[in-house]
Length: 388
Ligand SMILES: *Cc1c(COP(=O)(O)O)cnc(C)c1O
Image (tube, rainbow, N blue to C red; front, side, top):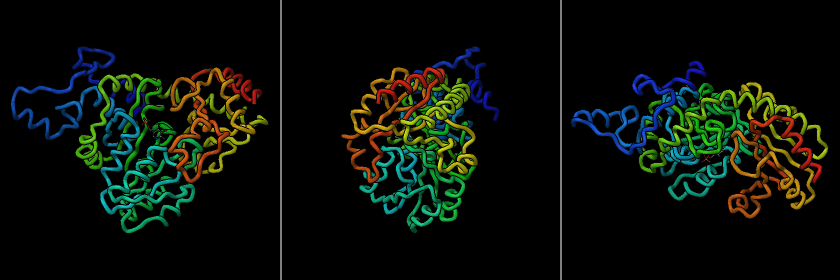
């Protein structure tokens, strides 16, 4: 489907909204009917007919249609956060006695779900180095039902060969879930490579304006029904109609934002990789990318999330670097119009950071490149590096 049709028109049915160009917000919790057969009919296919807004709402449905089309999926579910989307998908697919294989260093709360919460319900997870697909095959047990990948991951951007992982899972009768937040649907299509379910933190590029926390899961009608009838309805981590409307508005500029960000990021990477006070640069597709071949075959573009290690002899130097930044705001999250810097140094007392077996270095700074001119961002970094 044409990208611009998806972003500008799909699912909007303007004729039934008196020609409104922007869709109305259906700010209602429930929907009424004139007769019982009508209610029965609606309940039989709640994903298509609104009955109660925890299940379906027309504004959210418009968004779901766009998100599914962006990933080339039959269906999508929208959630109140990316963490809810990932948790609901995982919980729908495993039960007591089952086993999961997950890539090392997934998003922190994905790790907490798999490592700390699911064992209480009899579900075990093995974490593997996903840069070698053979590690997934080696970790499989007769109980393995699911492989969870995140490619690239969100701090140092290790990638997994998605087609190879999908093949390994299929041969074993296991399902696959890929967190595709970094690449966005524009730069990577996991379903086309054989992955069963794709999740996003829609808080990041899909919304792109730092004003909504949202998540999405895309996949086949059958798998989405399983998630919908199970954890989606029971956990109730829905996206509100107003937040869905903001997301639809955010999506209008997805292609423009991604194109601009990619261009700026390439310029920034060039500057950073030549700077004597940068000791490492992590960015898929860049000259220093150790998985360059995979980046070229699996990703169709660059996003704006990269990490650097700075030549800081101690924490105070990291503090000086960060305090000097003006364009880059110090904040978590990423994928939005404004540039952000997220220093690992802020995590040092955090329980989830302290409990990892492979903690990230204290001098690692993750940068999210926004829509500012490259020259302004480079000048900002230049000054901060001089303050080291
Ligand atoms: C932010 C993030 C999440 C969690 O999404 P929320 O919308 O914050 O709940 C999941 N995966 C990745 C890779 C992320 O960066």
